[in-house]
Length: 290
Image 1 (cartoon, one colour):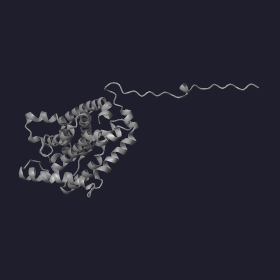
Image 2 (spheres, helix red, strand yellow; image 1 turned 60 degrees about the horizontal axis):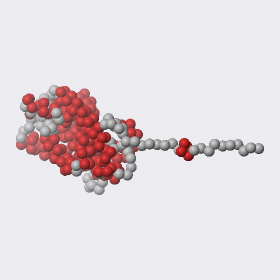
Image 3 (tube, helix red, strand yellow; image 1 turned 120 degrees about the vertical axis):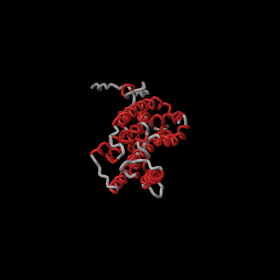
Image 4 (cartoon, rainbow, N blue to C red; image 1 turned 30 degrees about the vertical axis):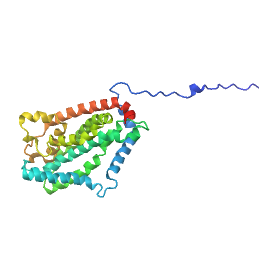
């Protein structure tokens, strides 16, 4: 009996060949890859939250202390001494309603801007979409925002300010603050890899940015001929929108910040898209430089 003949597979044909190529073009953002690595994104967010308050005596109480202390200082300087007008709203809650989105934006921008350099140990060892790193810096601040928002609810109850239908706009305003922080954070994170001076400029940038944003004052104090300059600041629409959504008719200017909000959306989208493209274009050199 003849033995049956069996074909011996060619090793080169049995093993599939996988070729890894770099992304081509400026518009390849790898958004699908970011979604596929969402578990890693969740881990990085949770890691940021844990590290932030690890071995601190007060823990998450710092989330409340930072805006409350700022509110007290601003209330004394600008509400009592300088008599900054706040309409029918007590100045403490007038300031806190603006500090709430601003503090979230400032902390998110600071974390995302330095996130790539701070994650050098990950970038040089494993592959994952680098966009995840600055995104995690923005998302990790949502817990702080939620805790600080509870303080605002208590303050509104204390001052007898009832919420209105306009509060339904708060998620959209928060999303705009997230997009603004991520957009500028992507630009600064990519530049910070090559120019470490950015790391020292960020605190000064945020401090100056706060004073040109109507946080401690209302936009009505700005002369009409200069208000178009405020519209170039995407956080103006966010801060004014938060105030109007929470305090409404009690403000000196009870009109909704429609033009400011529309301008903020447009500028935030431009910064976000251009920042993502620039980040993706430069990330191929991160592992070599960082």
